[in-house]
Amino acid sequence: MQKRWPNATIIFITPPPIDEAARLLNPYIENPSGLPERTNEAASAYAKACIDIAKECGAAVVDIWTRIQEFPDWKNSCLSDGLHLAQSGNRIVFEEVVAKLKEAGLSLEKLHTELPHFCDIDRNDPLKSFEN
Image 1 (tube, rainbow, N blue to C red):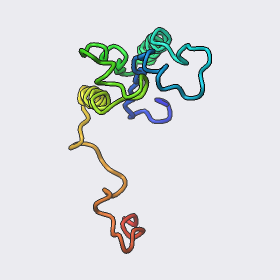
Image 2: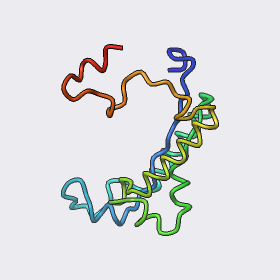
Image 3: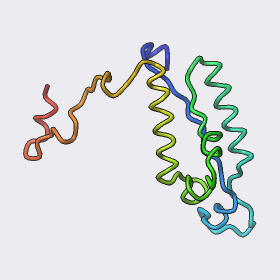
Image 4: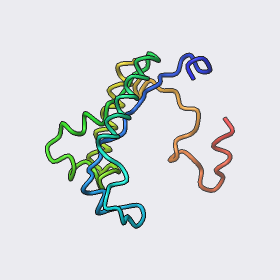
């Protein structure tokens, strides 16, 4: 990707941790085995691999797996079903990504947009907003 877009800022994001007990309460499908379909141990290994690859590529990385577990009661406050992020988990990801973008010299104020903001699109003639 860096060869194709040399000016792009690439950020790797690790997976979040897994609350295995919550996964058992919220399975994707019927689960007769009684085992979670994902484990925090596997998520840890994936997160470590993600960090290693980011370093190898010279890219930034946001270690959500570690960061979320720094919060008290992270299993209930940061995850909605043991896997997917709740509002506070999404807030953590947002704040960490914004911090990495700032480290790279990027901010909302400096970013060029290529498409109109949704509030600037004419509801009666939406295509006209994309002509410039």
